[in-house]
Image 1 (spheres, one colour):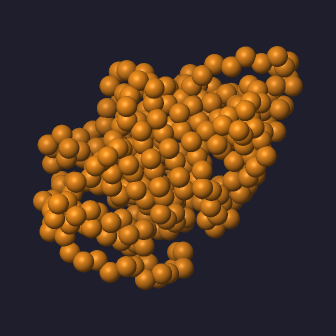
Image 2 (cartoon, helix red, strand yellow):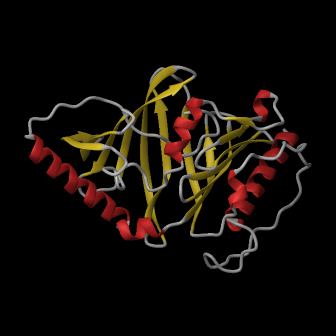
Image 3 (cartoon, one colour):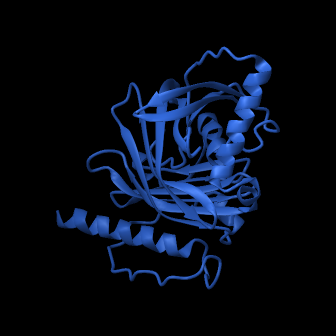
Length: 293
């Protein structure tokens, strides 16, 4: 997973099962149904029109900062990651994608590569690949029940329409997603990636993992995501998903008051305001500490 990419792709190993195809498909369907019910149910999942996520990403010692992700149906995304006073921005309007990456010295947004478009199309599907996977051209299989770190898990294999293979490991008791496995292509090189999900919390009747840990064999970097806030069905203007404006010079840190609490969807003049203020305050505090160091 590239720096600044927030929503994590999962999965990638091959399993062998001894069930007949009919029994295998039936068991897989049942597990998927229970997993979606554990999230809050299909009706609730499909009722979400926008999703805003705010938190912190750590890529290692001295490499951490706040992030925000805004998602909107159908398949739109705006993601930001701030590190050392600079903010990387990735946007996708469902067809075209842009990257503003100041870490490469660029101050202008550039069109996404074909590799990035392939990745962000998955990231912007906030329902997840298992929701309506048949209509998306996917095929699901039950692989086996196994033990993982003292926990009984159910391994499912999803083959997507484009041929990508993902593995989902669900807690056999709660049916919450515990681990995902995939292969991620970075600059033409394929890396196996495994992601762990924990600290599930309820947000408006839906369950979300507030702690996400991801690592890849062949790379030293481990990514840790801690979520501070999630907002559902908050108004987001479509302009957020277009080409980002040129990067502005970093401003001197100023005190930012904590945002006043408000009920979801009420009393906001800007999209995702509460979480954005939190992320901005954290970023400014980080820059202040760096300047004083």
